[in-house]
Image (cartoon, rainbow, N blue to C red; front, side, top):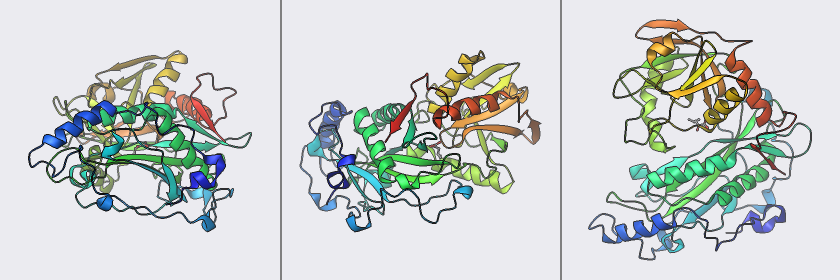
Amino acid sequence: MAALTSAKGALLPSWARSSSSGHGGDLWRVLGKALATAGGGGGGGCSLLLPRRWQSSLPQLDHVADRSNEESGGEIDWDNLGFGLTPTDYMYVTRCSPEDRGDFPRGELCRYGNIELSPSSGVLNYAQGLFEGMKAYRRPDRAGYTLFRPEENARRMQRGAERMCMPAPSVEQFVHAVRQTVLANRRWVPPQGKGALYLRPLLVGSGPILGLAPAPEYTFLIYAAPVGNYFKEGLAPINLVVHDEFHRAMPGGTGGVKTIANYAPVLRAQMDAKSKGFTDVLYLDSVHKRYLEEVSSCNVFVVKGGVVATPDTRGTILPGITRKSVIELARDRGYKVEERLVSIDDLVAADEVFCTGTAVVVAPVSTVTYQGERYEFRTGPDTVSQELYTTLTSIQMGMAAEDSKGWTVAVE
Ligand code: COI
């Protein structure tokens, strides 16, 4: 397959194939051994060079149709971007096979499109997969785009990969791949103030496995889509309902990593909530059914008397990058921020409630319904969530006078 990387000098990757910085080399060697000795558990171990015949295939690059230098995304209505999928031009792909021994080889950009997977791939059968969410904004004052703390996503993917027994790309590979994906899809980055190019890095067990064991091959893929606001409410406050029957995570489970397996289980509760007119679901812990965990797709904060509190991340809660950034920004602005157990009673008594996440950014919550009672919270001007939203987004969009935190990464 021809690679855009070789066709377009500007997109040439800088990291070397021989780099030893790839994450998971040791893990891979352990897995190789485990697979090789798993009696009946996989029909083939990592120690074997597996035939390429089952490996996934990708849409071929069409150089004639290369539009990555164009400035505009065609007929798209930039004023009405929601969080739907608008297919873009290119995706980045690399695969780690047994012979790569846990180091992902240099990847390629190829046309965005369907990929072929073995019916017995680890991800399809056993949900061996992780994802990330990131945004690239068009810079207001000069050419180019900004990414927000991309190395944090890379490190989170590495931690998740450890938990899910997968090799992961190095931080440098990950960030480089994200940059390439942004540049190749630059015409899909919305105009300033209209939204962002959402990047979706995926790490999945793409190799075939029948018995329960780690897959023998992994695919790291990044695709992109222009997005606006996540919730249908736009920037308006949202209405949540507490679910005390279904839980998102359990101690010792995978709530603290961004595995794909955490998301389908919330759909039942989410659909029920939507059918009753709520925006989304707020989950309680599965042991005491009393402490706040997360909303389906974001972290949650409460504010009482100027003190900001959010559930601490002890394994059942995703360590959100927006969450971490908002905590730091709130402390910088003089607020006391507590990471602790936050009970449903704390929530009921709160002045403000808000959610944070890459997709939702900082979303104010106007009501939470718990056991049939509807509790209302402050929203709008002069709220802590409004202040934090403005501070955060001005950094993310490259509008802050200077990024004194060093959180943004320029792509040009
Ligand atoms: C994100 O905020 O980027 C996420 O990954 C949440 C997703 C369910 C939209």
